[in-house]
Image 1 (cartoon, rainbow, N blue to C red):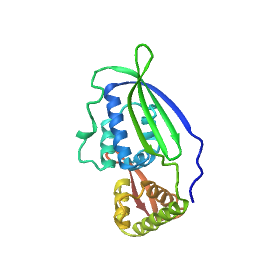
Image 2: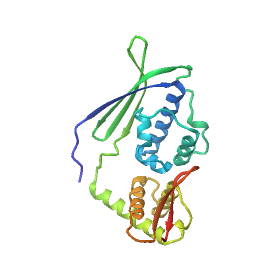
Image 3: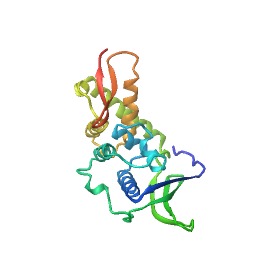
Length: 221
């Protein structure tokens, strides 16, 4: 069953940032959209709080630390950081920028503008992506969630979580078992959350790692 269309939403965000920070943001958005991941899914795979990437893309938090870059590269399954810092907006300056985000039906449009000295807006880049909040088929959604939950429960009963595991490794294991490379990380995220909220033991514990964000480990007390 197809979900009813929601009313279009237009949002505007502004911030002052350097050309380097803009270049990194653009590169990260390109990588994320190319993977078909939502901002929440990337944050999850990085082992960060759920709004981390969203806050970056909505200009509420500017810049990425080296740790952030490392965790993002790892989540995107990229070999190196070299391809993630393009020579975009090469001039060495700090300017005011405006991001316009339009959500309508199945699509989200991102438009980044630079505010010129005369206060005019110059389009710097424009990106389109599928709206992760638009669920096309409710039945398929429930079936996918149930399948991932069942697989994760089997992995939980095995030896995988005897040592701390990153969200990406867990996601990769689920993909491998299912045999579907395009399964969304959000299903794994939801199933993991249930295992951390079990009333009794054993259950999963979410711990923070300086190198790979959070990790999940089976605990018995």
